[in-house]
Length: 189
Ligand SMILES: C[S@@+](CC[C@H](N)C(=O)[O-])C[C@H]1O[C@@H](n2cnc3c(N)ncnc32)[C@H](O)[C@@H]1O
Image (tube, rainbow, N blue to C red):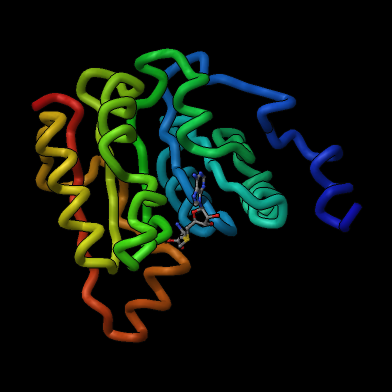
């Protein structure tokens, strides 16, 4: 057992073995990493409840520690597709996915989170006027995201209802002067 493994039993981080589902619509951040964005969004929007999801124990624990003083945040360690499948329809008022793993090589592109299945399922899991805010630095990924959003008849919004925020990866890419692609999709066409 490593140091983080010990901590997960101490902290109320939910997992597939210790599951949790939203009982009213919440904002879901997929890939919350070390909790920087989650903390900023949740502290700026006390009117909403937030859930941060990531895959690794260390990131879950760091996100939990960073947000534990806020009473409108929960952190989960759960694969996003599995968690969405587990949650009832209309569980989320919004979803935030900043810099999903890009899988830039063609032969790995099927590993991308934001493909056809995601767009099909996420639309049902959002409330009818829910939103999906995405940013990526990977042009080919962005183009395929726009393709699948159009294919499954998502609408678009001029901007996200949440406060403008950045993320750890965005800070890094901004320093490297990389172009950032961004869209806000709406679950109503
Ligand atoms: C490139 S990092 C971006 C982190 C953060 N959003 C940012 O912009 O700084 C992608 C994050 O998504 C997480 N992730 C990847 N696939 C995931 C999945 N299927 N479910 C939940 N989290 C996932 C990774 O563990 C990683 O922390």
